[in-house]
Image (cartoon, rainbow, N blue to C red; front, side):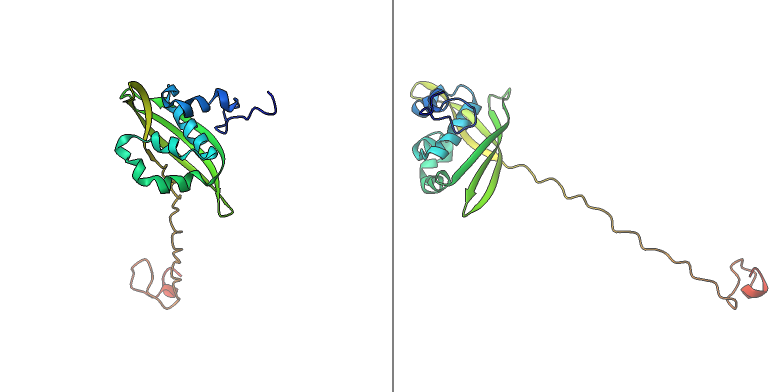
Amino acid sequence: MSKHTPMCPCGSNKPLIECCKPIHLDHSKAKHPEQLMRARYSAHVLGLVDFVVQTYHSSCEAEQHRDAIAESVHLTWLGLDVLNSEIAESGEGFVEFKAMYKEAGNEYILQERSRFLQQEKDSKLCWFYIDGEYPEPPPVEQTAPPAPVKKEKAVGRNDPCLCGSGKKYKKCCG
């Protein structure tokens, strides 16, 4: 690979021009939701706010949230790790990923299971991002507090005997 051919930021180890750039130029080239998700990540790295806005599902009304989307695009993105991707029997696409980014000097990980739907756009079938779920943090293991130690009361010599005879302990069992 020539040192002038930039690699795709999506982590595919392919040149940008062979990976996400064709999808940035024609959104319908993403034939699987993972391809669109990788292109959306690359668009964040490359500052392509319009692409990110245009690849939201129409029900999201992304244009109204353009400023917030632009803020997320302009973070420092550090890497992408796709954990799983699938097209369910319902036709919905799902991609679970971790995206690492830096903000105000701190590094963060965004983990999401994104949902994608197909819809026609300009007479072409295209995948669109609709929403995502964040995984529940693992439950904190609750350990029962230690049972209080029961200290048997010591039987005094002048206490009633434990056998129930009615005599003092010292005169009976003690």
